[in-house]
Image 1: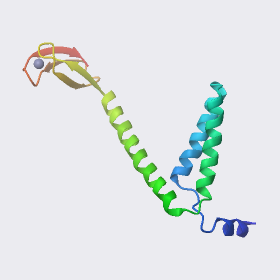
Image 2 (image 1 turned 120 degrees about the vertical axis):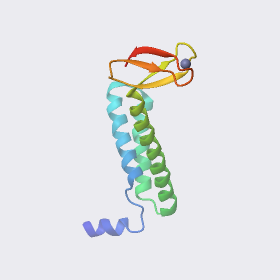
Image 3 (image 1 turned 60 degrees about the horizontal axis):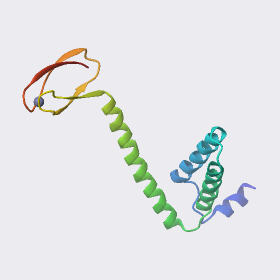
Image 4 (image 1 turned 90 degrees about the vertical axis):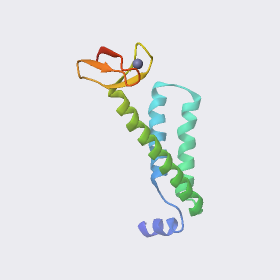
Length: 127
Ligand SMILES: [Zn+2]
């Protein structure tokens, strides 16, 4: 049985990171579907599964690995942006009351005196 499977999979693309992501996405949409009842949410996981199996059993290895490459690039960018977003949450953005310059202040430092880098105006804010 195992050997039969290996022979069947020979020359086929198999599972990659993109396929794994598509499967997870299909499961997530299926779970969402329990809360949001809509025809679209029923069709999406179905389509995702068909597409994933199409990729796994595909013999066009070049095209599939190109898709995976694109996915890896994209997910890298998303991860990078998420990290940056988290970094931004650790800061307060204040506007200088005299010139309107935006100033980034780290959170959780209590009351601090801020000196505007542009006009040197000083003002006190809670961070
Ligand atoms: Zn200023």
